[in-house]
Image (spheres, rainbow, N blue to C red):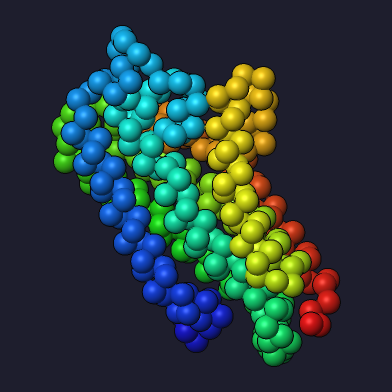
Amino acid sequence: MRDRFPLLWLALHRRRRMLTALVLGMAVFELLIVVIAGTVPHGRMFGGDGGGRTPPSAFKAFSGSTGSVSIGSYPGLVGAGLTHPFWIALQVTAIASLSAAAVAADVESGTIELVVVRPVSRARLLAERTAAPVLAALALNAVATLTVAAGVALSPDMHHDVPLRGVFIAGLLGWALTLCLLGPALAVSAAARRRAHVLGAAIALGAVGFALNFVALAWSKAGPLRYASPFHYYTPGDILAHPTVPWGSLSVLCGVGVAGIAAAFAVLLRRDLAP
């Protein structure tokens, strides 16, 4: 890989310690979520699926549900680990760092003209540096999915309510969400002259997107705003309870990501790279 895709390898090699820490952090976090979920008596938190108190509507955002799954159920508790702000922070960290390094960092440091020379074309530069965050996001979601799957498989009670098929479908949708965040971040990197612009855009997409979905679920008058948030289409809680592939949501998330990547190529091929 070093000989065939040197820019991809270099992008990952330079951030190997950060990526290793993110992967380990993801594994430990998801393991804790599964262990904690296994210690909560079924249906006891907030009344669960049974009678008694029910959680506020806004809590749907924390379990990745549109309303059919309570955060007090096993699917809701496990889903909370796949849409928790810490999970989002780990994903955004990888996306922001590698997206900023794709173009904007070299433009800011003045080294872009040394990199984009023959036989390294602009298209090849962006293609290999786009592959780096895509692979990083794939690794993070794979670790999260496999950790949750192992925990669910080892807990008979949890496995009864959370099919393993649902865990893997939720992992697939999680990767689609990261692709949705990555595409626009790369487009900003291709157009920006400062890495801070890319970092800010990636953080805004993650934080503001989650907050928008939270507000839309908590306040009925703001309900239509949920369609503008990528987290409206990412519903791991619902998928864990009802393991079917949400083709519509998957198409929206992947479509936004691919559109962002395509925009990044279009911008980079036409922009002036002079400092």
